[in-house]
Length: 253
Ligand SMILES: [Zn+2]
Image (cartoon, rainbow, N blue to C red):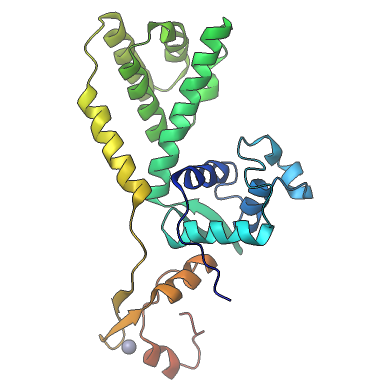
C-alpha cells in the first residue's frame, strides 16, 4: 500500500512551513499535523496553536494523511527533525527557512498595511525585537523596495527600540524613503528567482557516503535517508559491515 504523495503544491508547502513556525524546536511531526488538522488536542490548545493562521488548513483530511504531507516536507528538505534532549522536534532546513522567512516578512508588512488602512496608531514596536535577524533585515529590504511612505511612522518608532545593528538598517531605509531613492528592482528580482528555486527544489537522491572505519564507500538510499530524517538521526558514519561487526553499536550508528 504505497500511497506516497507525488508532490505538494507551492501553496501547501508554504502553508506547512507557516504552521511549523509556531512550534519550531518545540514540537514534532504529530503536533505539526494536528495544527494543520485543526485539532482540539489538549497540547494544541494549551500552546494556543489554534491562533496560528494555518490552524485547520487541512481540516477535511485525515490526520494520517496530513502526517504524510509533513513527512514529504522532511523528505524534500523543507523541514528537518532534530533531537532536543529525548524529543524529536521539527526544525527548518535552510531551504525551508528561506521560504518561510520571506512569507513571514510579507505577512508582517501586510499587517502594517492593514494598520495604515484602518488608521491604527503606531503600536509598541518592541514586538519586532528578538525576531530572527535575517528575517527582519529582509522585511526592511522589502519595505524599502515598496517605497511606501505611509510606513515611515512605524519605522521611526521602531528605530527607537531595536538593537544597534537593526537600528542602523532602519535608519537607512527611512533615509532612502525620504530621499525617494530609486527602488533596486534587480535585488528583488534576484530574490524572487532564488525563492522560486527553493520552492521547486529537487527530489531526494541516494547518497554515496564514506565509512570512517574501513574507508569504503557505501550507498545510503533515499528510503534510508527518509527513515533517518524522520527519526532525527544524523547520517551514518560507518558502512553496514562495520556497524554489524561491532556488537555494541545500534543498527543506526
Ligand atoms: Zn566500513
